[in-house]
Image 1 (cartoon, rainbow, N blue to C red):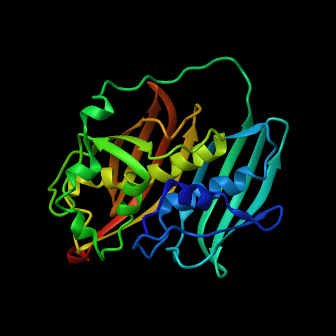
Image 2 (cartoon, helix red, strand yellow):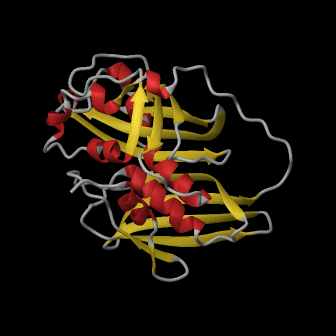
Length: 287
């Protein structure tokens, strides 16, 4: 059965056990490991439900410690670090059967000040002028069967369009740049925390891939083994993920099989969030 946006929204609305403990499950679509964006989104929802209502998420960061199992319950343990008049800070540890799989931290602020300066969006082709993900990969989609990829899951939840798609098989070296129009396929409401969790959910997908483009390795290369290591986000303005937003990506550097990806997210021509992630890419023939 295909995964729907309603399934995703239910997934992000965690089951609260007590003041500081939440339980969550995973969406399954062939992949055995928990998708990193899911860990980000669920962690945001857990930490955000423990702060004063007037405090809003402005930054978060996390480390992917071990692969998560999509068949097992995830426990999100939140620890309060600060509760001040203007700021709240939370730590989080996500575990499966006592095994840590993700650690995170987030800061929340009461709105203040009147100065506002947000970088304008770069000039790009509108979304409907770019080819959709499904159209570009129509011939390669059968290759995903049995490969435990999260791509089918993301394609079922988000419509994405780009001028920078590349083959999953043998793309060859490319410059570390990318740009993708995205929108959730169904309405999600206007809860600010949920909208931020959804943004974190989708933006995990392409940061490391962009940073590693110069290596010329395809997503379906059997010799490649990739994993996200860490992720950080800063939220600058309100966002509505069920309307088009643009994800402008670059890969500033790569060393020791690690690649650093950076991304700016824009909606209505204005910067709404910034993301950075370091990931690992090993090729078996290189040891």
